Image 1 (cartoon, rainbow, N blue to C red):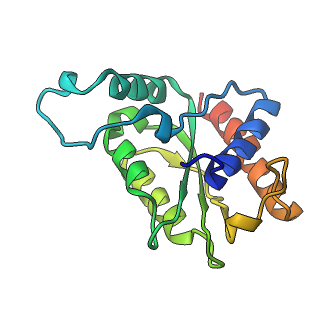
Image 2 (image 1 turned 45 degrees about the vertical axis):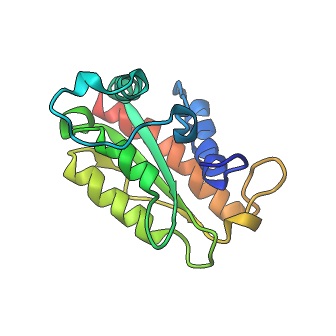
Length: 170
């Protein structure tokens, strides 16, 4: 996610709602951790420390929020690469809130559908609601809230629903 990222803004709406519902949250911004390309090496200990830290944080989390911009009709390569470091063993049974952001008017449905499928294949529990933002370059106000109040409420509900689901799973 770039500086001023609308995906980061959308994820923050979900995380803030989760905090209000009682969760401890941490944003992992892929642009800040610089993961190498996943190459399924035989000796995973040879990956740089940021890979091990990323895997540790995801492993310790009770639930996840995964957001991606939609580039060329699907999630970014950076998001897919990060997920490739995670096995079904790590994600099994975790509640996952999924969201997408698109610069165009069609939304990020391909991204959210693909992330839903991947999470199910890795034995996670993706929440059924996966909202997306369309025309993201003009969707947020100066405070980081969505201008569309109904869409803002859907993103906030995603954070609350994630906390509720995690409580049911644990």
